[in-house]
Image (cartoon, rainbow over all chains, first blue to last red; front, top):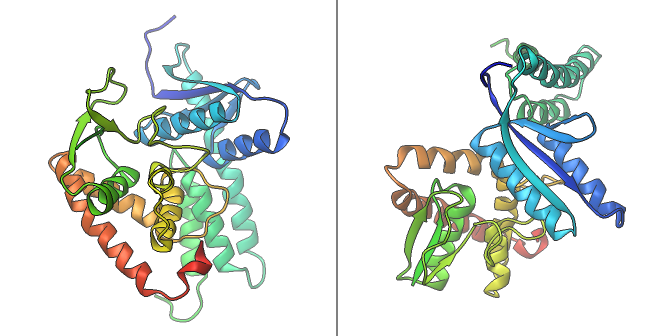
Length: 149
Length: 144
């Protein structure tokens, strides 16, 4: 066992009544929208920042109002290499979304407006600043028609 | 009267303080306590703190709750509430492009202000401007 090191994470666990299913689905979609990762079907994880803490805090309030129960935790990983592996998982999930945008950009007459919106959404979940994101940004800028610069 | 909230104000609290001083309590005095501190000072109305009356409810921001609690039906205020909802919380639909920018500006305003008190005062300028702009646009009713 090592001393705690590496980044700090906010964790959310919750339970919510099975019905209505719309509430369950809504909470799920909000967690996905935040770019949180579900670990072992048990804990939702985000890197801890004032903003992510606040988002989990308010989501926990909302879950409570929906008749559920939620805990919000803050913690660090103790085992060597696990923080890096978790960061990798976050990267992989945004990189997949960025790859999709790149793929659509390489097709004929891509819908730049729609793809830029998609890029903005992915970037909001890009907590570890993927290099691929920078590439998507450059491609979106250079895909614009008209003057070269 | 006195109003209390957590330190490090942002987009929602700046909107609430603007609402309070403009519509509810011209003499409002704001107190700031560290996040999570209990008990809250007595005789002060708490806002934007989890679990209090004036807070997030049903996925809406505190500004939205305040409009409901104080029966404010001005469509311009309700549109501002939509913007603050999108700026401050995860919303499933995104209808107000101003939201993301407003959130960043308010965050930056806190960074350039020496304390929360000054940040709230400066924030009033932003919300006066937003109100004036929305009020000048036709068909506010249609945008609710």
